[in-house]
Amino acid sequence: MWNWLSENAPPLQATVGAITALVWLVYLQILVSGLRRQRRTEILIHLGGSQSLDARAFVSNLGFEPIYILEILLTIWSADGERETSIADRTEMAKEDLSNPSATTLQGPLKSGEFIDIGCFEDLLKRARWNTSDDLDASAINRVEVKVAALSSASSAVVASKRQFYVECAGDKCHIRPKTLYATQIRSWWGRYRLKQELQKKHLKKW
Image 1 (cartoon, rainbow, N blue to C red):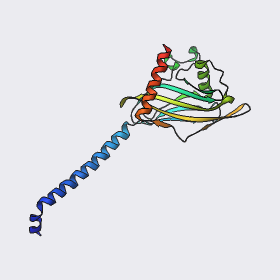
Image 2: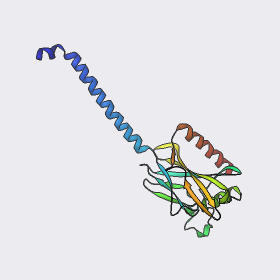
Image 3: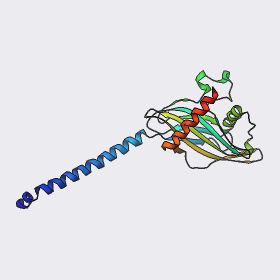
C-alpha cells in the first residue's frame, strides 16, 4: 500500500489539487451568485383595495438595496393608438392640499422592503390628461402599462420594471385586470439603455 502511494504520489497530488480547485470554484460561484442576488433590484407594481378605477396602485422595493424612483410612466392603448406620459408628479391635487412640498412628486428614495402608494387608477388617468391635454375616457381605453424607472445604490445604471393591465368597461363601471401575475423586471443591457435614452428625451423636452 505504501509502495503504491509512493509510486503514484505525483498523479495523486495532481488529482487532489484539481479536486480542491474545483471545490473552491464551486464555492466562488455560490458566493458570486449570492452577491448578485443581493444587488439585484426587484421592483413590484401591484393593485390593492378593489379592481375598479379606484383601485390603488403600489410600487414596492423588494430588493436588498435602496432605490431612488426617477420616473413613473403610463402607457395607454385605445382606439386612437398608443400614448405615453409621465405620471410621477401629482398634478391631480392642488398644492395647498398637500402636506409638504415634497408630496407634489412621487420621485424619491425607497428603502428595501418599503412601498409607496402612487394613487388610484383614476388619479393616474387624471395626470395623463393633464400632461397630454387629451380627453382620455376610461371606457375608450383597452390597456395600460405602468413603468417605474429608478436608480440603485448598487449600480449607476437605470433599473426598471413594468406591468400591464386590461381595462374592461361596461356602462359606467370599469374593471382593472392585470395582464401578468407580477411586474416584469427590465434587466437587459439593451432594455435599460433604451429606457435611459427615452427618459433623456422626455426630460430635455420639458426644458
